Structures are given as C-alpha cells and as structure tokens.
Amino acid sequence: MSLQKMRQELISYKTGSFLKAEFGENAFDAAEQGEMEKMKIRIGLFGFTGSGKSSFVNSVSKSLLDDNHGRAVVQSTGAEGTIILEEFFYEYKFRMIDTRGFMDLERCEESELFRILYGQLEDGENIVREGEVISTNKMKKTPLCSQLHVVMWFVKSTDPRLTQQIYNAKNAFVRSHLFDLGVTIIPVVTFADCITKSRDLVKTHAMNTGDGRQQPHFITNFLPELSTDYDESNQRAVLQLVKKAIQLGEESLRARQMKRFVF
Ligand SMILES: Nc1nc2c(ncn2[C@@H]2O[C@H](COP(=O)(O)OP(=O)(O)OP(=O)(O)O)[C@@H](O)[C@H]2O)c(=O)[nH]1
Ligand SMILES: [Mg+2]
Image (cartoon, rainbow, N blue to C red):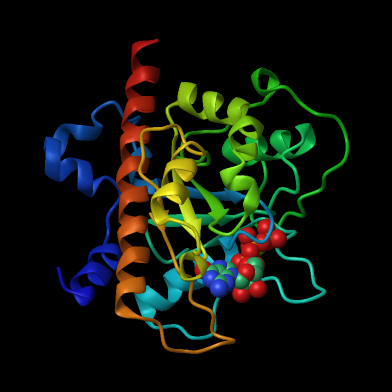
C-alpha cells in the first residue's frame, strides 16, 4: 500500500470499521444503544521517562499530516518531559493519551497508570504522584468510551535495563491486570536508529515487556530539532503501528462489550 493510502486509511477511519470488514456489520452488536457513535479507540502510551512517548505523538503527526512543528512537548536538556496528561488527535476516531513516564514503576506510579486506564484522569490534568495508593478493584470504572482500549509500552533500545530484564519483573502486575481486562500491550522499541547490540536480542527482551502475544515494533522517532526530513520507511513503521493499535483496540472493545452483555 502506498504511503498516501496508509495515511488516508487512518484519516478517514471510522470506529469499528476494521473488525466490520472482517466479521460483517454485526461485529459490534453487543454495543449499548448509541455507544458506537461516540466511541473512539483510546490508545495509551506508557513507559519509562525519556523512552520517546511524546516524540512518538510528533512522529504520528508528521507521518499523517507532514506536520513539522510537533504537537507534544518533548524532553529537552534540563527540562522535565510530560507532567500533564495530554490527549492528541481529537479530529480523528482514534485518540492517543500521552502520559508522564515512570521513573521506577513504583506502587504510586502503578496506581496512576490504572487511573488513566479506567478513564479517571482527564486531558489537561496534572499527574500528581502523591496521596494514597488505590487498589485496582476499588477503582470506579467509567464507561467503556472513557477507558483505554489498547496500550503501547515504550522502551528505549539502548536502555541497559531492558536486556537485564529488570522491566519484566517491574511490570508483571500491570501486565497480568491488563491481560485479565482484555487490553493488549504492544511493545514499542524506540531509538531504533541507535541500536548497537543485536536487533534480535533487543526484540526478544522487548517481547517480554508486553504480554507475550505481540511482536515489538521498532520505531525511529521524528526529531524536528535535528531535521525536518523523515524517511518514508520510518513513516510507514509509525502508521503500521497506529493501525495495529486501532485493530487491537477494536478487538478489546468488542470483547468487553460482549462480556458485559453476558454478565
Ligand atoms: N535518537 C533518537 N532520539 C529520540 C527518539 N525518540 C525520542 N528521542 C529523544 O529522547 C528524548 C526524550 O523523548 P520524549 O519523547 O520527551 O520522551 P517521553 O517518553 O515523552 O518522556 P517523559 O514525558 O518524561 O515520560 C528527546 O530528547 C528526544 O529527542 C528516537 O527514536 N531516536
Ligand atoms: Mg513525554
């Protein structure tokens, strides 16, 4: 498919259309009345600080619209990265939720992650890491249209903790909770331009940061401060990843609607 077609497919995307193409118009029959009309696929961007989440938002903007300015604030020397929850791509039927990166995935950070997952933190809200840690079963769940439907888990290819498998142990609880809920984690390896070790080794370790079902996607982000050129192959990788996330988001949505219907 041409790059132009890939762009158009996402720009004109209508919620549910990928699964409807596969299973027919009845694919979302378990939806509540009016639910699909207001539904957008919500993609959460999670990962350790500096792993390239906000840069990825800018890479999507560049790949879709040739936008050189970037929408998200990226870390720069001496400045903190994202501290406020920000949602992007309001104009389309998918939404990216850029979050504050974890330092160490401690319990308060986990609790914050679950609040975002269940739609309790809103766009523009400051992510404050203080106060009590709320257990996941006590969290008030908002309607499906406010919850996340799929998660991208970002890791930097050059992060030594990746190959030491420190992250695998760190996010085991998060992984199992997302799995039980029916939300897929897609591992995303950024800084693909900086890989010095074997790509296969990075791939194997990155695979374990997800739930083991999804192959990692390798991304070289668009960095406008270095150059406004962005290779077509990089743009394709970005758009393919967005499409994959939307497809998995639709699957999660459908499964959760059906589950709700049964109980
Ligand atoms: N070489 C290279 N640099 C990158 C890449 N992605 C991001 N960067 C750089 O890494 C730094 C951190 O990127 P951010 O996008 O701000 O990271 P973040 O995950 O949003 O960080 P927090 O908001 O603190 O969680 C920035 O200086 C980017 O320019 C990449 O793929 N390759
Ligand atoms: Mg950020």
